Length: 326
Ligand code: PAF
Image 1 (tube, rainbow, N blue to C red):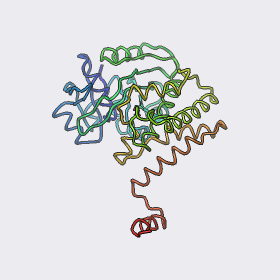
Image 2 (tube, rainbow, N blue to C red; image 1 turned 45 degrees about the horizontal axis):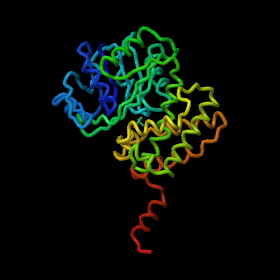
Image 3 (cartoon, rainbow, N blue to C red; image 1 turned 120 degrees about the horizontal axis):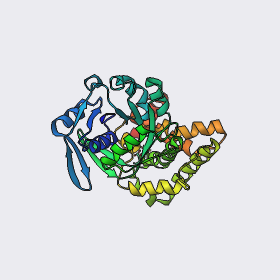
Image 4 (tube, rainbow, N blue to C red; image 1 turned 30 degrees about the vertical axis):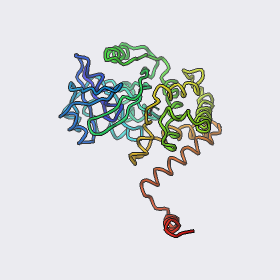
């Protein structure tokens, strides 16, 4: 299968590397980060896994979608705040029958992709893997988990089964679901519990459970999300999403969540598509989401602080306070 991955971040590289091990696959990584692209093409993709260093050479990285041409499958892995522009900028890989699969975090990706290529070839799913970017051409596979995929219509089509077969052949545990919206919400609730809290505390996923006061906030944030999902009539896949979120914390214990990585790298986060989505949908359905509001506020604060945004007179006053002894 000819496969293009839009967004060669840690997760895009993880899937690209694994899929490139299947002899029948041709894998292309598309990314705007030139140094990273050059490193992959020169040295291969380097993946740290279970203390071992693996090199994947059977894949090509590029910044130019036109050099790849139309593919059978596109997997979209950019941050959800960039989905629309990433698909728009890489239109050259999409043909009439190209399947587009989003495995991204957050709400709104299906709609953003559909707005660029039409809805008929868009499929969605979730991943419970954890991965960390270590530097140009190098990632760490920090947690193993299942990939769930499905057609938006819920039909177990020939094409969704084909994707599942390709994933299995690459050693990625995969399951086809008939309830994609439920899947997206299942994953959203995991991210609601883990991502903002790791970004604020700088703890790894597993460490969140070592502090009862933090664990309590995780539980409340997820419970609010469950209340919103219930109010919207979403059929969740997990009977106990709080317990499931904690299980993901344990399965990806060593991982720095994607939001923590963004905070540490001074990059904009996906907060508005994760906890922010719960707050928005909570307003629409009349469900209180105060814990998620607080988490959004704190992450927005960190984003603004790190971007050095001025707060009119306040920034000045704060600087003076730091300089002058009490
Ligand atoms: O965003 C992330 O980092 C991941 O979705 C997850 C599952 C929380 C693992 O770190």
